[in-house]
Length: 130
Image (cartoon, rainbow, N blue to C red; front, side, top):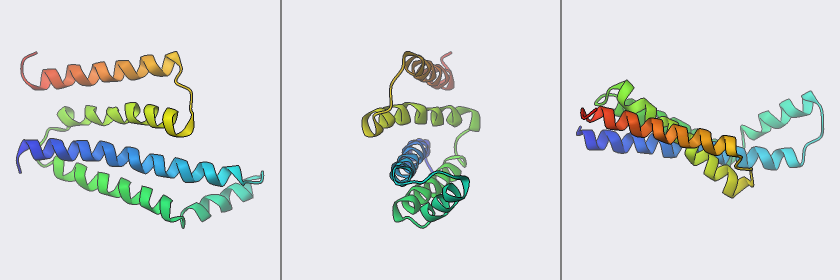
């Protein structure tokens, strides 16, 4: 397997992980909107969510992300590829804001920019130029 395919699988890992989280958040939010209070009802609602087709799709996305990651790890160094999984923070910040109206605070924005800077530094150093 070529390294370019391995990097494509790393990207697929990041995207599938984000999609899985978004699907689960979407369905959990819908379930909590119709919820009654109490720990027993919360537990039952959580168990019901495990049978929800969208939640199952989110779990399948997480499983596929893991499969992509395992294949990518046959060709890439862990310390080289793993920092790119931090890009999930960027995707989830954007998805949370645009899909769920979650606030983008200065702290979240600064933290996300620091994550991006870290990934760029690691990617640059992995090329052997740094």
